[in-house]
Image (cartoon, rainbow, N blue to C red; front, side, top):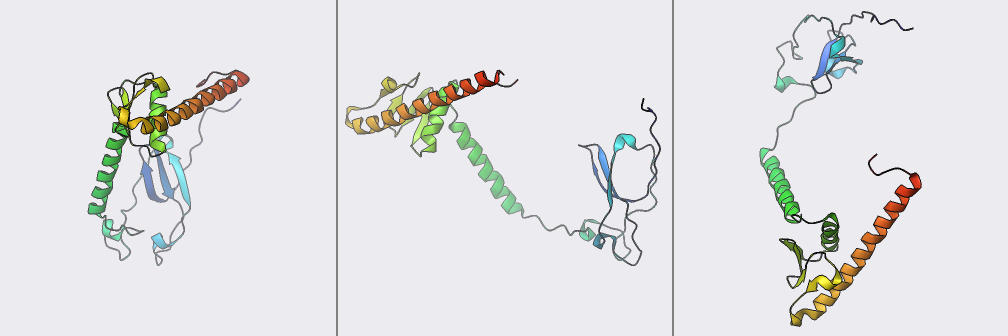
Length: 195
């Protein structure tokens, strides 16, 4: 039977980092010689859960290499300047991408309908949602439940209609085959999906 009392261990080192997310601190326990810069020496790090710390004592505050008080300017490794303009561009680019993805998400449509839409998008076919209908090549309207017979277009766009029907038929077949493979795999393992 294990003893439930924890043994007490004391240590001395320099605080390297503290993580409030993981609830741990990392301590560099390697002692440094005063003549050598601590940041230049390899470390010997110990990670300690905060719940295991019974007490601590600050022996001295961190100081810079020249003995002055440390700051962000003297941090090791050096912290470079942040290109705010580039960050703003990346943020705007990500926002545009998220808005584009949102436009490509059908509202109130089935998972199968979204999969069909995504497959048209994947092969670079111009497609967009209009309520629950798909508009392909700005000419063909595919209405729910998104079968070949649900495709409509003006009489002068029959060639486009035939291409869209061919792609739609192929994508529906691929989705059906994928569903059958997944059902067969679940039946063979005897487990339900997700549990």
